[in-house]
Image 1: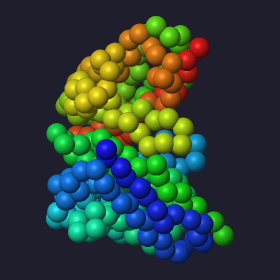
Image 2: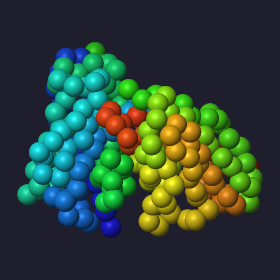
Image 3: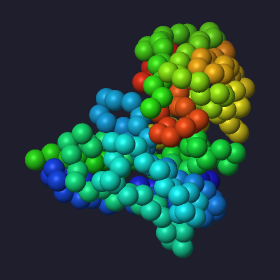
Length: 120
Length: 107
């Protein structure tokens, strides 16, 4: 069974940094692209980043480009999201998701999410 | 960015009925449209991708149609467990974008 477990969320002040982790199990992590998606309170879903299976390519939403970095350690089956210069509008539940087998631009398994609150 | 306009915002239906949710893209996205179901406090579940391809393990009462800029998710013979939020997502180009969501409530 595919499992994705996010951690590292919390309450931080504007301008600070935070690093989320997502530990994957139940599939060959190194073979799949991985995504981060977020959902602000009472809002819809926002895709924020994709990393290819081997880390060779990374793509970001404009809202986080230059501030957030997606990375992975295939030896640890772990996906990361490093978040710098955090703003109040970054407050959200952050989900990691596995790229689908047939098309890794869609997400066929999601974690339960990690909550990030940016407030002074 | 491709804007995804989803309708209706809210839907109330009884078990056994059929419902449809629409998603309109601001430009041609070919067939590259996915549908997800989200339950409270959980990550989302992929239902349909490439406009009409049913994800493995998803019941056949779910179906998707459309191409270009207009797409529809149809759920036939609603089951009580089908309540939740439904989102469309275009996977044609970066950045991937989602619709605003449709809340399906079961009577």
